[in-house]
Structure formats: C-alpha cells, structure tokens
Length: 432
Image 1 (cartoon, rainbow, N blue to C red):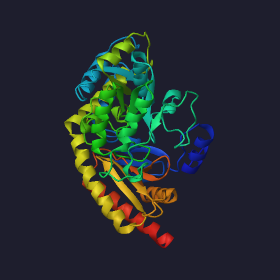
Image 2: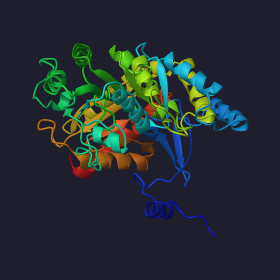
Image 3: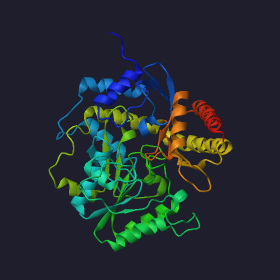
Image 4: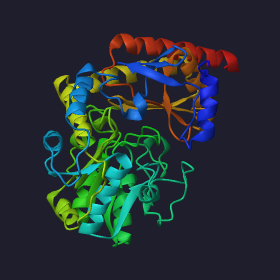
C-alpha cells in the first residue's frame, strides 16, 4: 500500500483531529533554521514554531542529553525532588531579576500562567488587570484573561478580567503620537486600579506577541513600575513568548528594568524538545502557594524535560544567543524597512520589533491605516510556496517573524531575497 501524499494527509488530519489549523505543508524533519516537508521541500524557518525553537532545530548537544536521560529516567513521581529539576531551577534563577527567587513547575505556557495566578489569588485574592490584544493561553482561566473578542476565541465561563487598551503607538486608542503624548496607556492602568480597589494584580505580555508584535515605548514601563509600586499591586509578566533570549536579553523584565512578582516561561524554555513551563515567583507568592498541598501537574518537570531544558539554557548562555538576537534583529529590521518601503510604500503600515520578534503590519492605505488582512495572507502564502515560512497575528493584520536565534547573515539574506520576489509578485498581480 502506497504512502498517502501530503494533500491526503492534510485532509485526514483535519477530519479526525480538533487541530488549531491544518496547513498545506506536512512537517517531516528540521535542522538548524530549515524545515523539510514530506515532499522533500525545504523552507527557511522564520517563525520557529511561534517562538519555540530559539536554539535551532535538532541540536546534537541536546539530543545527546536526551538519549542519556532516556536510559536513566524519563519520569519521576511529582513529590520526589530530582537532580535534574534542581539544576534547572538554579539555572533559571541565575538568569532572571532578583525579585523572583522560587520556581514553580508547569508543562507549558497556559499552565505556567495558571500557576502564577493561583499563587497570586492565594496570596492576595482580588481581580487581575490585563491588556487588550494579549493572549495568555487556552485554558478556561487564561482565556478569561486574554482578549478573546479580538481573536474570536471561545468565551470563557469565568468572568472576564478588567482590561485596558494596549500601549499600541501605531494605533493609539487616544489618537496621540509618541513621544508627544502623556502616556495615556500607562495612565489607563493607574486609573483602572484607582477606580476598582478589588484589582490587586496586573498581568501583561511585555511585548504583545500573537496580537501583532507590539512593542511599547520604554517610558511606558518606567511609568508602569511606578504605578504598581505606588498602588501596591502584584506585577506578573507573561514571558512565554518573549523569554529565553528572544528580545535581546534572557527576559524582557531585564531589558525594561522591571522587578516583577512573577515571570512565566515556556515555549523556548524546552526549545521544541520537551513540553515544559515555569512560573518564577517572589518568596511571598511562593509561600502562599506552598500553603496548599497541591500538585500543579503530574507530568511537569520530569527528569527528561528538565535535562533537555537545562541543556537548552546552556546553549543560550554559551553561544550568547540573546546578544546575537539583538544584533541580528536590528539588521533584519533595517533591511525589512528598506525593502517594504521600496516595494510596498503605500501598503506598509509599521515595521516594528525588538531582537528577533518582528512584526510587519500591512494596510490598504498608509494614510488611512485601514488594515489589509488579505494582503498579509497573500504574502504569507506566496512566501511559503517560495520556501520561506512566516507567521501572522491572529487577526491577520501583521506578519510575525520569529526565526531561531542562531540565524546567520547568509540565511537572513536568502530570506530577504524571497521576500523581495514575493513582494514584486504581489505588486505585479494587483497592478499596484
């Protein structure tokens, strides 16, 4: 019996799984910054599993660690300490701001956020303020904290959390222009807490990821730091996407000078080798969590997962991949601005980013700034056919770029060449 082709695999997969999406490419293997499908076609990976593969696909160093650990132990009962978990916790706490001193286990990003929230509710109770266009996970609680309406997500039965608009300078909800504004985005946080004394915590993505790679200006964080201190509320940073070197430092908290009460990590923590997440907490939050005899997840922080994550962190540190992301990202951002400005000047809204998290927001007209989701889809699909795999925001307004942090200049320029041919094809097809 012959093997099914890619079209048949996609059809069958979509029919029998409740999948997030069934794309036209069937993944088979990957290496470095390259993905290969079942038909033998190669793609430059510019999305990294949506920010998972920071150290690159199939690193031999991590595969060797996995093989050794497989022979020793894969799983341990969750009430037993292990050498592997201890080593990972110590490595993590050496890499984050000193305000967080205790690790709590999780298997992924949504669960890490759940653990941080559970610690906060145990410590303080009250409501948690969130920011528009943010996504914090697909569990019942994290959906209620995410901007479900903006992304057409299922509405959670849990009451929605209070929410303020994001620090989104390109589409400022107050019609202002940075820096000639009064940081109304930060004042909105202050006003919300003042008007509702039951708000005891703030949860935000420092850089909004799947909502469009939205980077707030630095003064926003300076103001936020002062507000949470003055109001005495807990600050929780969802760094599931921004952590592990993506922005040019191990955490965005470090970049923006924040001392949060909780930082959540996942995605690139496991590097695509194992499912793992972590909630890093202040001693006060951790102590409140310890008051309950609760196992957060039976399969969290297995010896196998911890060994792989520790090896992954060693590569991030030894190869200085955060610093590399900062330098490579600055070059890529500059090249993209020149390229889109030259070929699609009237359809390019804003190209923004930090490190190797970059968003290219496309519009129907650069003056009116009307979104152009159709153009975003065309570019993403044409790029895929040409051998370049991109991501998009959930509302299709923005192309999202998150290549592995090992991206070299030769691969970057091959990707830019594909971008150029795709943009010319889009212009030619529409007669623009």
